[in-house]
Amino acid sequence: MAPGKPDNQHLPDDLVELLETRPEICVLTGAGVSAESGVPTFRDAQTGLWAKFDPLSLASPEGFAEDPATVWKWYSWRRELISRVEPNDGHRALAGMQDALPGLTLVTQNVDGLHQAAGARDVLELHGNIRRTICSRTRREIPAEWLEAHSRDHPPPSPHDPEGLARPDVVWFGEALDREVLEAALEAADRCRLCIVAGTAGTVEPAASIPRVAARAGARVVDINPEVTEIGRAADWHLEGTSATWLPRIAAALSGSPGPG
Ligand code: APR
Image (tube, rainbow, N blue to C red; front, side):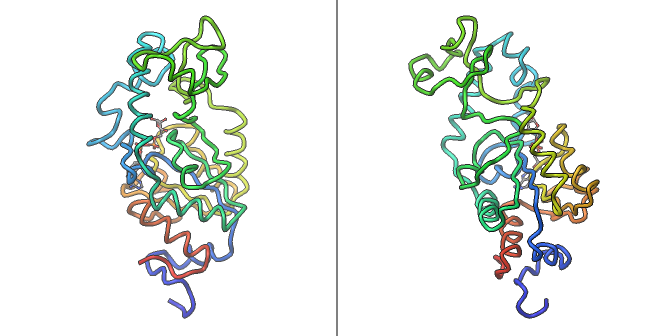
């Protein structure tokens, strides 16, 4: 390594060179980024949430209409689990990068709010946030106090609509994403010079298109994942391993300081 360069002996030289230009960056994260906080991923065979549940019976409007109590209990369990976990080094590295580089846009598929808990701001939550509850008919937010005054075994009635029920503010299979959030994410992908993808299987659209939009606009793409995915195969760099290992190194190269070992 040339003297004075951050000792990122792990990062490819050409990636370090690009980071040192402090480029506009678009980050896309998935469930893998929260895995080291103890939040099971969706598709990890051993612990994946979907391995235990039928996704369509739990994370779809049809599933909720058919059995609201089971869906409500599953989300209550997930919310409880998430309330007990902490952000990890990967979340913290991204929050630090955002501080160092105002041109960094953080897009996530995760609904756990851990990026914000680590200090990240203006996070584009493509799939919503499990910590927020809305009315199933008006989609207006329902305050926590209202929820606490009702049983946890089935969704409370909505305070906004007599026909409505409380439901998590997440995008279910078959539902549309928030248009403004999606447009902002796609614009960031189109504008960036570097797209950092971390912890996603890249199987769910339109999130999986973010790195393709970036590449098509001439950006370089780096994928962080212990596995090789479609995104990793198409990327300029695939950093094999965990986001808690690689994101601090990228943050260090961006700030030009010697990276963690
Ligand atoms: N660091 C980085 N990546 C990891 C780690 C880790 N510590 N652990 C697992 N991974 C990778 C896995 O190899 C996998 O490719 O993270 C990915 C997790 O994939 P999924 O569980 O499919 O999660 P994700 O890609 O975010 O799913 C997208 O699908 O179910 C819907 O709405 C849900 O937002 C979710 C979307």
